Length: 383
Image (cartoon, rainbow, N blue to C red; front, top):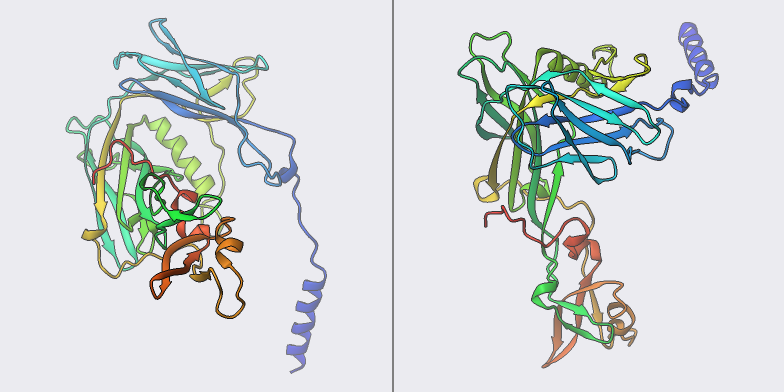
């Protein structure tokens, strides 16, 4: 008993004496250039420039605007990129020779100049197929690919996903500012489309295999209660062939950004890319510019092909209220006070005898799907 009391006292003292730990790196004034992109020989080349932000900063993005970017080939030809959005630069319509080596030149608005190393353009084999496995709590999407010439060996993937969903309740009525009217067809807000892009680093390697074959490489998982698979889901997968050095860079970046947090994870390591400040080689630049072809493939997954036990869990609480022209208890005109000013959205009408007595209604989040998506159907969509 005495030992137990001593132990408890030690714990209490340790807790009482805790001091906040704020390492200097959290508020470091240093800001490093981040370069994201691939020189694509058979499609659009997109490069994103940004600067790192402090962990303590409220800002999560810091795009680098006003820079001049140029793709250079080893035969002295060059191609200028255009800034399409803040920090996003693209090259379209250029026909790049797959047999050549390419590099990226960057000149920022503050007259700093950066250059990537020449990289041999790499021919990426087609994606064989995209499939999915049904799990107890959702689905796992995977990809299959192979290079019959055994030349690729190192792969990177990213994707864009699009899905059709609907709001919790369907609204057939709306306020025009003066009264409640039937909702026009072009203002229906029940069905919407949403999209997202991959946020993790997806790699594959066959370097230790006899054949250059990737089998069921994991791409992403979707929970069974997700809105993504409520009606229909589509994924557009991009595949890039990498050099061994590029694969090593992406592997280290993945370890440093996605696989830290427990005592069993790998220790952080120095990330060495292939982009350098021409006048200051010691400056840290985060990024690796590869070159080559990109392969794409799109598949659709319908809710009809998934287990009936996968039921959508809406990301909000939804209830329905009845708003009367003459409330039976208060005799307040709820329609005029609540619905017409659009504090809520009417769902359907209810009657007493042959006259409309009021409308059922709910909050915008439960009815208006455009708060999380768009009613505009994408051109590629299959009904």
